[in-house]
Amino acid sequence: MERLANITRDTKETQISLELNIDGEGNATIDTGIGFFNHMLGAFTKHGLFDMNCKCDGDIEVDGHHTVEDTGIVLGEAIRQALGEKDGIRRFGNYVLPMDDALVLCALDLSGRPYLAFDYDFDVPMVGELDTQLIKEFFMAVSYSAMMNIHIKVLAGKNAHHIAEAMFKAFAKALDEATTIDPRIKGVPSTKGVL
Image (cartoon, rainbow, N blue to C red; front, side, top):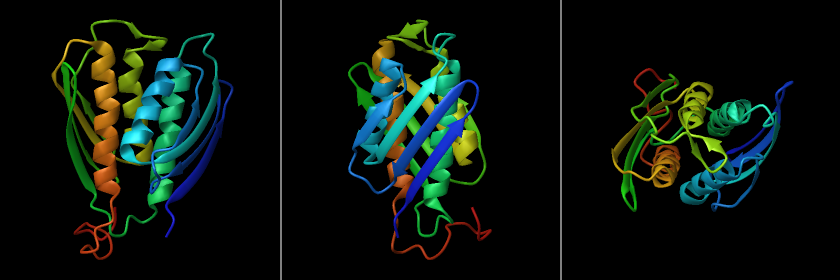
């Protein structure tokens, strides 16, 4: 069974097309108009072993908010669509990822219930062309759109680039674990019988 999704979103603020293959090899073509955000999405696909093509034309002449948030919405929709009924998945994933001075934990549950716990406030306003406040907005959008519980905790770190990148990579590794098919699991991994 192929776990694929193709999502488009067209508003007055953004036009987004995104293709996602959960069972990929880490290949990506990404163009959001925000260089550092492209870099983060590229790290997500590479380390989660997802294939993704993402093109976003957003109103970045205003700022990056709509581009980043709406890309999170579309990515979340793609994850949810690609997983279908979630038969046989592990459901839970967690990873503690080091990147130089940074150490970031991400734990998640593909529960069908959205929730984001994000305990970090960046002490610089920008990394490259990306407003650091938008990193939380991105994960919030993914959580609510994918109906996924996400906890991100910074355990150590000073460099904002390293911390942000460790967040995206830890999220990728945790999602890869949660979406992995476990042959021991029959049906949906929930006592309710649905996720």
